[in-house]
Image (tube, rainbow, N blue to C red):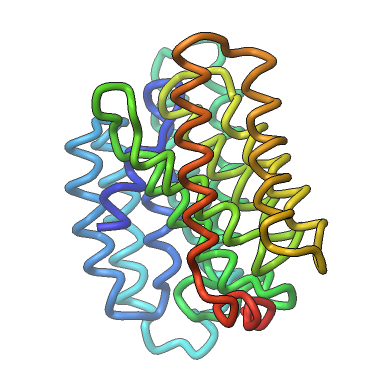
Length: 273
């Protein structure tokens, strides 16, 4: 289900490598096949260059079966180069054919996004994460969840996905401090903004909110929740007015207040990853 939803995170109409980056998390594992099925279905449903990403997904699956017995294939560096290399190889076909003047720039940008997401995601599958020393495994899982939640479409202008996204970012900040709050808030928010072709307000709002809530370590949880809401609302108020601001404020408030009902012991073990 996550691989399917993550295929809906895309920008510029044809760049959506998040699903295949998630699939790359399962290098050296039989579970990659299920992620492969999710990528195929998600690519067809969301329509971000489906042939391209199905081809990348197929390459990753074949490579995984061929090198399954290598002892080091479960290290994050192999997922990073595997996904980035496969996307780069298939992307070269698009560069060879006639394309727009930004094709080269978007090609490089996509490779950078692939490398970054592969490094961030890999710990979620329980492998040797590239960011493991800072609780990276758990942060990776919150980030994947945040990106997937942002794809859930709104109903009558109200988005349950954005509500849950706000709560997810705050949880990451409370459990992992500035590192978790900024990574999950900024990347998760930007994923939603780019997919909806909107100004990157949610990325800025959740990134700053995660920064402040994470930095206020040692304060009461209510204080950290309040800071998160105030920072997030302030950023949105600068650029959005009227009904759009009020609906966003409602989603932000409800999503963060729900975190108050989570038992304290859930946050006490956050730094272990």
